[in-house]
Amino acid sequence: MITIQHEPFDIGALYRRLSDGCHSTGAVVSFVGRVRDFNESPEVTALTLEHYPGMTERALEEVVERAQQRWQINDAIVVHRIGYMTPGDDIVAVLVSTAHRHAAFEACAFIMDFLKTSAPFWKKEHTTKGDYWVSERESDLASLKRWEQQ
Image 1 (cartoon, rainbow, N blue to C red):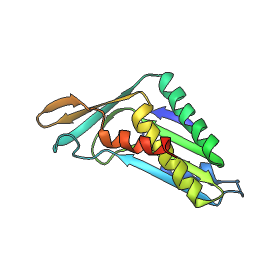
Image 2 (cartoon, helix red, strand yellow):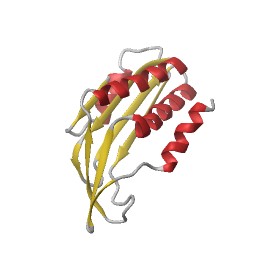
Image 3 (cartoon, rainbow, N blue to C red):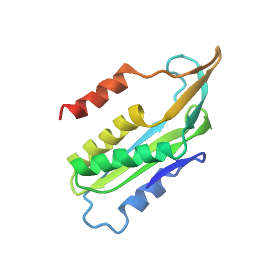
Image 4 (cartoon, one colour):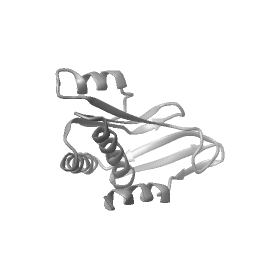
């Protein structure tokens, strides 16, 4: 399940949707990304996330498909919010179910690393000193490179 939405999500409901009725699932790993009150600026008051409709969903589908080729995934859910959000709001949820924990951890990290670098999202941070578009981070690119070496 890939969803792009303005509304907040319920991580408990996503977990139940992923795990209910699948008796071959031995592990569910989830990641939730949240809005912080700092990033490139120490005084972030809000952020606005934009995306390219259609292209974004396809990019996320491709990332999940690549993960499914590497690990035996029972199911995966990616929910990403767009629009205006403030510190403490949840932005993204990635949940992966597999038979064994190692595959679930690896697949969840893989999906998140590719999402951060390859999905067409644009983030504008609002601060007490003005607004700016967030630039690509070297640390995100370094995280992505580890998957190319494996």
